Image (cartoon, rainbow, N blue to C red; front, side, top):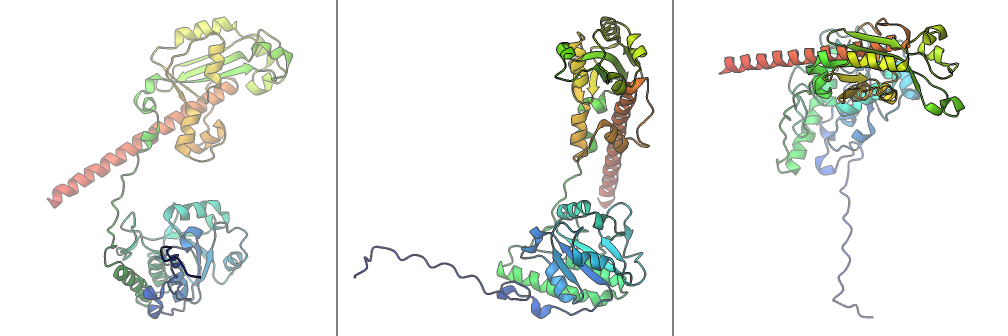
Length: 421
């Protein structure tokens, strides 16, 4: 049967390039000929984030090939990883974590004595931070870090800052310090340079990258509503407590009933606090929740009197600050009128903390120096009001310190520019 010549033959599928089984790179850019063999008394454990495993210009595998005693593991969760636990349990080589952060010791200036198990996380800074944070077995290790004594040679991959370096460069510096032989471990640069040169040659030299210009750090105050930093005398923190029956209770027909209302201006310390006697039956759990006895609640003023008294205290320029919207809604439903400008401090906390933040009490313990402050008046409302004001003051102080630090840095830069000029 004759084939119709007008019908095109299907294109042949592209054939994969031959790869080196050792370094897993295409044969045209294999760096194995440059690999040294460096024995160490330090046990090296590299924990590689899965997204880094397939990076063609990564260096974790390169390091593991050059260091025969090193172990390379890929994953994200490490608390139940048997080989890692066994390595960390070796009393002859106590484990340390190579990761910067508060409390980290400078490993180049103050290396630990004796053989150790060095745990290094391979990945982007964001990936490494997540791995350390989410694995208590890593977060609990003694932490070491260093400032690279020379610029990175990673010419084909952008680094956000000059002092950042690749995994193999980091191991070169650290093993040189741990084993007291800096020059011997510079041999780790041979395959690194070979990989870079081969990659650039394959790209015609067009892919050499310069250091990425770092973005200026975002100031803390930029995450806060403008009124929190600019108008302290207008910030009015409020807390309301209710005689609240369960949703399916017949006594709830009228909704939640305001029984305690407290407010405080952050900048001036002016304070309002008043108890309103419940008009309907008192829910059995109300006294427990509001931390006021039944006699104290029954002795309160009429709710209309509370609303009228607060109308004489509040100002049109006040910015109402509450934890969520329960207190403002409760007051509005009671016939009161609050200024229109309001700040939900719970929403601000969620934006600022950017993590599981928990209750108001949890946030106060986390944000306020020294923990939750003493109550400013009676009942649970007095305790919560003190927390709200303390949180606002802590945020304002942090924003002011951040601004002062940024201004000092700008002044230093200006001085340096003047000196250079």
